Amino acid sequence: MKVPLVNTAMILSLLLTALSCSNNNGTTSIPIPEPSTAQPAPPPVSKSEPVVSSNTSNDPGFKLIEQADCLTCHKIDAKVIGPSYQDVAAKYTEADMEQLAQKIIDGGKGNWGDIPMTPHQGLSKDDAKQMVKYILSLKK
Image (cartoon, rainbow, N blue to C red):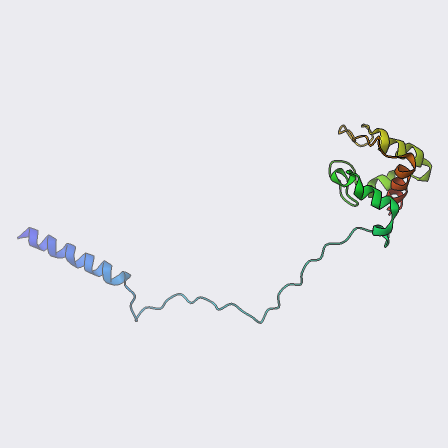
């Protein structure tokens, strides 16, 4: 007689468990808030552009820089492999133009770290000076 009573108790507990897990109209579900359209979207974040002369695309020095491989290692306002052009402009003056033009032609390392700058031996001294003139114009 004990076995049928145990079986009945197990069936009742399973039945109660199944009923308590089912969706019952008498229970309250957790409310999910609707997305609010009253809040405005945040304004888009704009990146600040580097300070560059307004005629960058027409500058002969910049055109020479674009035609060479310079922009692979240098950017106007950010260090990549080499220093930014603005950092170079901050460190040097017009008095350093000959030295910098020769450095572009010969390449080298040591002034900005251990990574060497590639030589540009096919570049004329006048073209290298045009490039330096543009770079120095970026002085903040």
